[in-house]
Amino acid sequence: MIAYLDGTPVAAGDRWVVLDVNGIGYRVYVPQPEIREISRAQKKVKLHTYMAVREDAITLYGFLYESELEMFTILLGVSGIGPQIALNILSQITLEDFVLAILTGDEKSLTRITGIGQKGAKRLILELRDKMKKVQAAMAPTPAGKNEQLTRDAASALVSLGFAENASYDAVKAAAKGMTSPSIQDLIKAALVELKEGERR
Picture 1 (cartoon, helix red, strand yellow):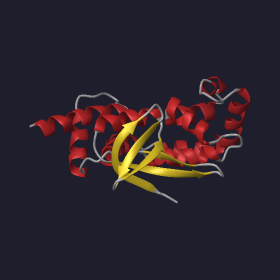
Picture 2 (picture 1 turned 180 degrees about the vertical axis):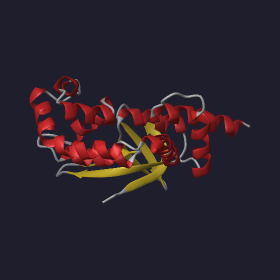
Picture 3 (picture 1 turned 90 degrees about the horizontal axis):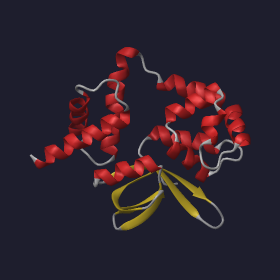
Picture 4 (picture 1 turned 60 degrees about the horizontal axis):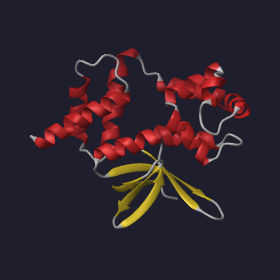
């Protein structure tokens, strides 16, 4: 079992990247938003991986965030959901919106995801509602700690992209100044600009 890969991206497609790990190229299927982040970073990347083994193929799926790997494995536990549909879910809806759709029974939002029809949406809601209550509780920090948690999560993502821990944290803190209720994606994008400007100085 391959738990993670730490390497340099050398090629990318619509749903995959190739990581060069000590001279060996691994093709890893990755959610589309993360492909864009990896391409922008242009440095070594750490991907948390899931290896799907079938009689005719061995396929690696990779994620910058451990929370997405955990959600991926939860989705695979739903009857009728395979790796490709699980990857579609993580590519086409945010984790927060997916949890909300499950808890509120929002079939319409779920059926917008490629590969999920009305029956599939009903099955997701039925099988995941209790689990998503726990996920939602874990995603809801106290008001006092919310901003700090967001900063840590964004910095952790940058470290996964190959940046130094201290530089990542400082860049996120600098990027957050003047931003009102930023998302983690907003912080990462702004922090990447800070880091690249720092490299040019």
